[in-house]
Image 1 (cartoon, helix red, strand yellow):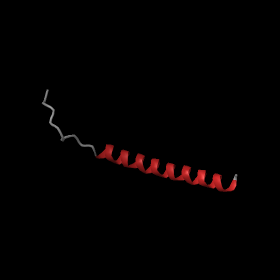
Image 2 (spheres, rainbow, N blue to C red; image 1 turned 180 degrees about the vertical axis):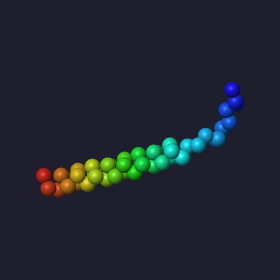
Image 3 (cartoon, helix red, strand yellow; image 1 turned 45 degrees about the vertical axis):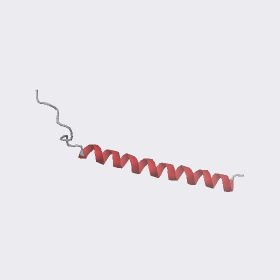
Length: 44
């Protein structure tokens, strides 16, 4: 079995997945915050 060499693995697929996850997370937080602000203004 070959020795493991640090930094040689192709991680482009993982990087794209993580980028998509972060975009989705940021948009979700923005929508939730806007919803909370809207509720604070109009429901009280």
